[in-house]
Length: 391
Image 1 (cartoon, rainbow, N blue to C red):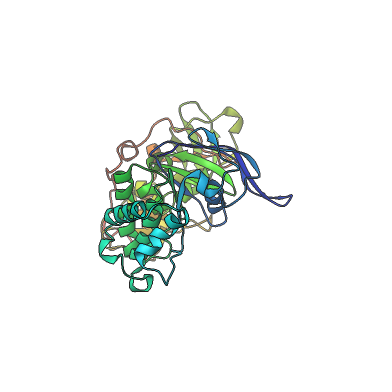
Image 2: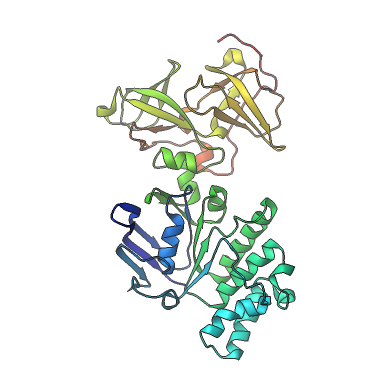
């Protein structure tokens, strides 16, 4: 186990191309941290800098308090698992796992001990004499992980290790990696563009965007209290709905927002008086929008598209061309079809508010499903709403 500290870490290519922009981060010993962000945000570059495969342009990096900017990868005590398995096709599983240890000139008995222990942990013992072509994708990835374990590193780095696997194998490997972390109690830094992987594996998530850290926190912290629009829409599947509006009245305990439809909504969010009259965006998660009969609903919308997932249904609602369609999650099967008109309500306690800059205003109260994850939001849904209601 190791503690990693990044102090104003920078990476430049040439004079102007800065891809990592002064990152400060501390990863505690034994912690599982996931770095997540869209393609091109710099997450793999950051991981390669930690590994010593990319030079550091500015700032400092410390492992257990020792500055390692100029140390080689082997001197840093790091084990890395890449997106591609990078196995030697002519070698057996045993030989692939032992190769790095042989280069380090470890005694044969020590190599055998480490390889056999890694194989036991990952249940690879029956496969040690096979070659990579005889293995499934999941087995190959386990061999790549086993090779890293055999080095007995201070720090494990994973660079999108599940990208090449199908959906079922990704679920299986997520469980195996989580179990591996519990068993080894190792420090792991895991890079992915898949926010589902981040939410299910991480103790803390680092959201990266264009070389900057947008927010760091536990999965539920980021889901319930996003720092800005980017985090709100990147964390969560489907993403948070955003609706344009105007801040009619600012307040320290409650703010009044006028939506594009002309409706006004009082929400428990603190806003400064200087922002009164400025454009804002109201955000709400798909599971928090409440449904009801058209006649009783404060808002109406036409259904553009319906996704039946078996155990739940997603409805995409027309927002009159103002950004992406809004998504509403129904935790049951639904008989509502595209073309129908539905009524909905936006519970104030579940609403977020974002300034013109994209930053979130502080929420003063949260809904029950925010405070107690796992509880379903109360959704009242008439299975056949009245179709073609007049707007």
